[in-house]
Image 1 (tube, rainbow, N blue to C red):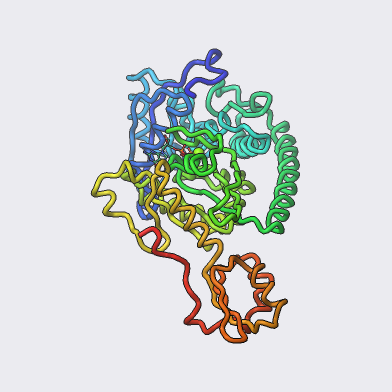
Image 2 (image 1 turned 90 degrees about the vertical axis):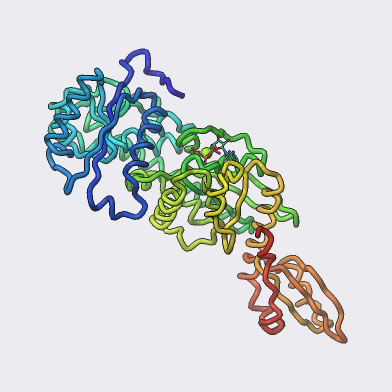
Length: 441
Ligand SMILES: Nc1nc2c(ncn2[C@@H]2O[C@H](COP(=O)(O)OP(=O)(O)OP(=O)(O)O)[C@@H](O)[C@H]2O)c(=O)[nH]1
Ligand SMILES: [Mg+2]
């Protein structure tokens, strides 16, 4: 993945990385400057860039002209000359003016984190919808940055920032960009319509939706593959998956669910980017259950979990039913294992361990099917008794005089529809038996 189709035409990017840390960032709980810079190295390498050195600065405020302080910019210039770099990559988003000033002063190509992520996305997008989403995000990013620099971006000279996933390289003319953005919006709307129709149909069919979400490289695709045998791309790299993939999974009790793998999250994920992928990420908001996959062998686990919680909140999915899966426990040190909670909505798993997967399936089933409820129904009420069988899985039934006693594991979808007809036959609340929550302790 390190080479691109354009690599023969352009000089390989040899970059110095630059990060600025402001007090405001330090206050943000889910932000770690060192880790962000470390990630920037991986992102750059994933995009095919040779990383030569990195530099960071603690500064009270972002400099509107240079982004970093003037002295730091001079230091960066020295480093660039010393290493013979042709690119500087910034860990935060830059304004058009900052890019121009830095470019003029440093005389190298200037790239920021957003462009780098978009470049990786451009190389990864496979489905028509994914390709459109990436192109739209790229163009929306470029447009406001074009002002005052003529009508094209030829200064970029190819490579990152110019690679487009569509048939041709990114259009670089401003008027064309506007037209193209409109066109892409329209095309995406078609996809959205189609997607919501599809979702409605699935909802009506009563099939449960389970979304797999989490930080990039946590093991989401691995989980989908191990559970369903799906032929998905699994790789130890950032953003291996871009397009969501759904697969059917049959649970022990015979119930079928749809599992969907989604694009990984990352800290500093620009809002615009989240917006471009909103439609696909809506799958997460609509899900009956979210499996939040965590790489528990990462030292940055807590930061990653916070980032995921934050993005889920931005998407409006934070209130959804969720199970946190501490994945990769086979790779954890004893100290790391000790930190993992085992209570409540948490499970420890290895996506490669069949026993863990079986337990996970049981847990998914009990979550979706809900708790079991006890009912007492007079034997002559045949119609009510037949409803009993529609509302879920009858776990036990016995005759008690002229009544029938039922213990039913409720199917939430069905219960929402017809539960009110049964309300007067439920036994007292003490007899409402909980699901088997101790399965994973
Ligand atoms: N040891 C171990 N490795 C795992 C486990 N789960 C996943 N991996 C590895 O972690 C790496 C990333 O897995 P993916 O499934 O591609 O991760 P992802 O979350 O889909 O990542 P993106 O698509 O990039 O967001 C791969 O090398 C997997 O083999 C696990 O339980 N144990
Ligand atoms: Mg993946």
